[in-house]
Amino acid sequence: MAVKLLATLLLIGFLLFGLSSTEYSSESGIFPPKENCNITLEQAQQISNNSILIPTCLPDGYEMQSMCLVNGTSEGPDFAGYSQLIYTNETCAFFVEEDFSGTKEFTFEAPASDDDVEHKEITINGCEGEMRIYHEEAMEICWDTNGIRVSVLSHNLEMNELVRIAESMK
Image (cartoon, rainbow, N blue to C red; front, side):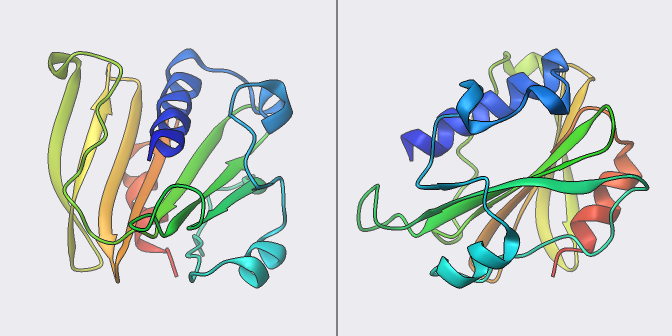
């Protein structure tokens, strides 16, 4: 879980400090290297031990830039793996993370004090979840579906757009 927590903290930092999409890569040091990073969705689906959900509805101009996959062999018997998908347009990015370790309590702690994070309950396709708004700049939607913890993060998309992406995950 330490690698996933570090990657999530780095995602939030990426969102809050507005690094451009061209500055992201596993080699840049922004994210730690992973066993299967910068692979295509097709490659990930072939080597994954899990079904990978992807958004079927993207905002105009966004395309998948990168994907990282960690299968469940590297962090112990309760770790089933996770994936990170990065979608970008010319200037911005949003991220989709999937934790295949099953439904658990939300354990991620933001790098800000809790006073700086607004929490709202949300329902995505009939599944209860949580929206977190960090410093009024970045938003994250987290929910559990079919044993997968899904998280969609962005600093530039409107709430309704983030919900639309989340609801389109298939």
